[in-house]
Image (cartoon, rainbow, N blue to C red; front, side):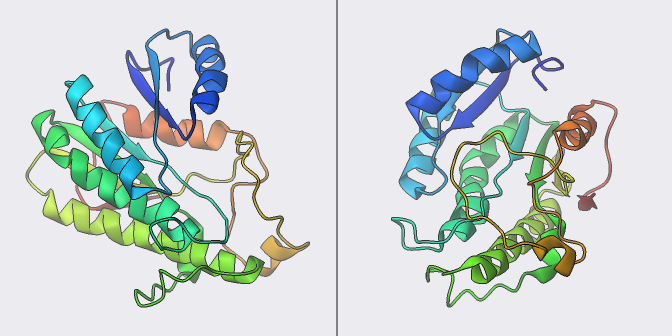
Length: 229
């Protein structure tokens, strides 16, 4: 994306992560206009602090890409299941806080990276505060968070009709994370047992790059709401 974009903002969770990512991102993209800021989706206070800092320092927001797909157990400091908060609730709040800026900068776009795993999701709002334990429960939570992504995109698209802000949910395909964040190891044969689920563990990055190329192209416009694969 950096190659095709005059100005790009990448978000990381720590200062060390920012330092580690800034130079290789600039080198790979050939774009010196790469700014990194701290955002921890596992903390709603961090989301609010980032949004305030961004709105105070940056006059434009043309494309918001909500990209999180963690597969973790445990509970956040806000009292929610970690995967559900990082994959959905954090971005839900962030989008709400930045929505007026997106409207002001229209035509603009919101791209929410979901997953085919949403087919196995089932959201129970009475239990999203409970931490999950074990791989199977974590997978179920992951699917529920991706289902929430899809529902969020659909409702946003309906609410934003006529504002010249478009919203898409996309399945990025299989790709390999560059993250060093430890995640639970899936049991052998898991993905063959769950048809349609392709968690981001195997292939390199071109499928996602192709998808993002489509979403950032000025010639790519479809009517709200839209779910893309």
